[in-house]
Image 1 (spheres, helix red, strand yellow):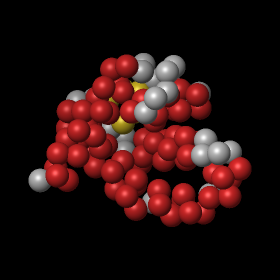
Image 2 (image 1 turned 60 degrees about the horizontal axis):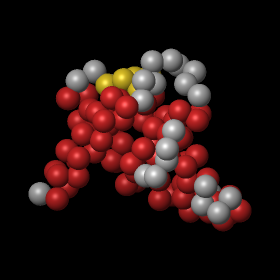
Image 3 (image 1 turned 90 degrees about the vertical axis):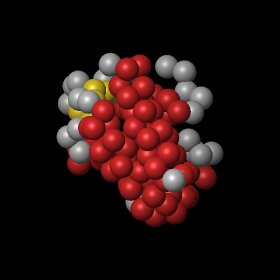
Length: 108
């Protein structure tokens, strides 16, 4: 039950990000659900491995490299899942930071 709730909340968060940032577009609710599922799988399976591999850089940057890692994972999911499309193929990296950290404390 909790997993289903988290999945739905992630889909709603993706829809909110698409509403707030013009660089992210989501076609419909079903596309948001698929993108949330893929993003959740990537965050659960790939991100822990990448966090361990990039630990020295993360320590040197006092944790700020995790924003870069989140942006790169979001970018990878965008390319794997065409439901989450970008308005411009050359979206600036700063826009990706704001998009990924929109659930955090980033003010863009």
